[in-house]
Image (cartoon, rainbow, N blue to C red; front, side, top):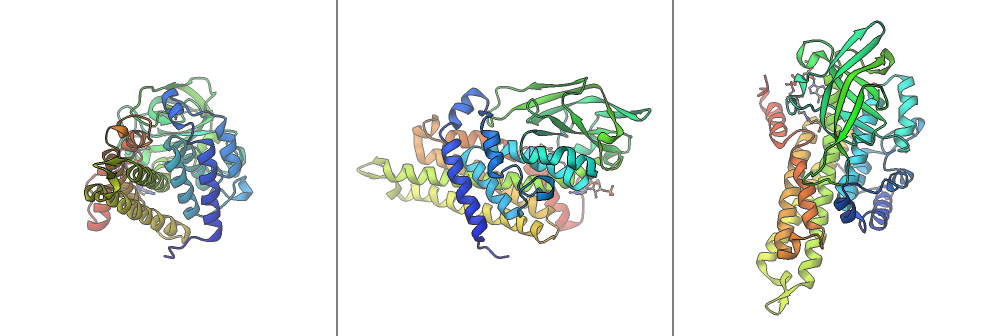
Length: 383
Ligand code: COS
């Protein structure tokens, strides 16, 4: 693996950072307090290519490799994880599922709009009774003539109240994970309702919703992939999603490092900058190490995808390490800031709040460990 970035990758990082420093960083605390980012930033982000990365140009995207995608997610995570989540769910989880499993018509209908962010997508897998055990979901799709009728509920759905299309996984037979089928549900469909979940610990700038599907009727052309393939579509998509989460967490750790160095070099105690104290340097060294290690794991995964190699376990390792590192780094950064880190005058409290969900969603740390353990031993702990 070549660890040097290409000129194009460096240029994209500069462009992304410059844009986010101007358009997101000055507003992120306000958005956090308002419990919504200013949606006017979405088309501007799309113009820069955030939503079109890794979607081929023929489908309206800007193409690009997964290392560039990882860099984009890192910059978004450094600026505001709420923005990172909006992009990686809409164009990552939903766009990529359509790209790899959609019919030509579905690709034509949705991909150019998702890449341009004129439409947003949400990913409806998790349910009130089904989190880690995703193959056991209970929302149901039943055939009625040539249509499907879907009933069920989905919980903690990022973009839920903003999305134009929901990728919904529903049970079409009682055959465990093999009885799940995916559907592209326009959110304006009769019987579809999204209710926003407020008062989250973090990621307050992004819409998180509960979805209610009550007799939602769809033509068979709304089915994504084959009947019974839904679980595989979800798991394959989540492998790439885990890279996006990992990379966003790298951005959080990087942001914690920059904030801690800036604070520790200007704050004086006992007549000197606190950066001169060994125990403060110990905290900063740990954050710096976490940034490097998490970034290398994320880039290793991105590089495997770019080279067409298997990457699922690498994605689990990157997601596991980077999400735990983000919580650890944010906690260390608050320690460096002392009382100042406990209020929102500095970004580190928000980093901690945003980081906390990263060890939970898109597969908890425990699920990632069991996936890694299964790969190492050949024995599944889930059966
Ligand atoms: N890519 C493609 N196919 C996959 C896959 C992947 N990453 N992982 C599993 N599959 C396939 C398997 O190959 C198997 O196919 P066959 O029926 O042809 O054998 C099928 O899916 C069932 O796989 P498995 O037996 O591994 O399913 P399990 O129920 O054991 O999976 C875990 C258990 C825990 C791994 C899975 O449910 C999981 O990842 N849970 C976490 C869910 C999650 O991340 N939720 C967050 C939602 S988004 S916030």
